[in-house]
Length: 456
Image (cartoon, rainbow, N blue to C red):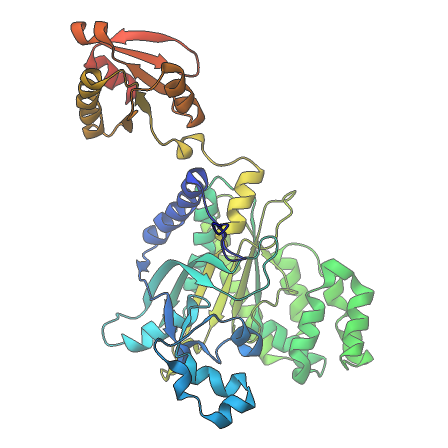
């Protein structure tokens, strides 16, 4: 009995239309990456395990797809280790490689390995698939693409300014107007923790604060209490719960809250610089918004933190994010190499464009014209015309078999081919072509030059 075909959970097949739409998004992002001066690199689909392991925390390590060594790898396991049945002991001996979990750690490895060939600051972009052994669910897959851009080797805040502009440029080019680029700074969060006397509970208080929009002020306070944050500390946070107004007003309130924190005031200074620059340069369609509850990648980022949300009315998680990291390459021995980077969420951007019907109709067009096959003699004449059309950049093809007319016409309709050409005995004798518009049903006899003009 034949095996029923299937694919692994958390992976997907893409049809021609889906591939065209995904390519449209990636090409739009790639074009803007290049306009902003980023250079493309690619890294292998799999890395040495020791490159990846230990870089994402315990949870991340569990989600890394390990690759079994080739050959009789079990012979390397001692009877004692085998009897232990310990994953920690056995894995390094049977798996020395793993599929990449993200593009950031491989990029850090690339920078360190090629540091003598790179001109710093180094601006790179990378659009490649990554793999995570996560539990598949709606919008979360085990294989997906990441679209990243990073600059390493510069501490200048103008890099953050350019990334805000880059987000604006990409979403404007996609006609996705009204996105919000949220920004915060790790130093501000550290300053708040310092002011309330909870430096050792930075993660706990920011994780709770991040839920303000979802669960409300009182439940956030309850969660903070459960994490051991004092009533005095919570009372000092009160202004954060009512922080409103534009960027400038929020900054003014934060200065009051963080007046006693040097690191907090440094974070405010950095945000003011970015906001002033963007105010002078102007954005096309996006809005820059301060969000002090934003705490993504807190263990990772050291300065600015970015997150992009879809236009109002579209229910979707973040469609982009990133931030400043001061020692990315330190994990591979190259110290004090500051960087900043952002990422675009390809799959979520696809869903947003689909929901509000922003994909251009032309991107799904494949073949422009199908030549009907009436037999070998007619087919040869058609193929000569098809060849000339292709040389002029027209997407044209010949139906391969001399099937019934209805079958060939239905084929054109199902594939949404807008035009068909008929070359029968009469057309052969006159040297003309009968062009039929499959939408309107109109058809005309034309010479080749007129056919080419109409199809181009």
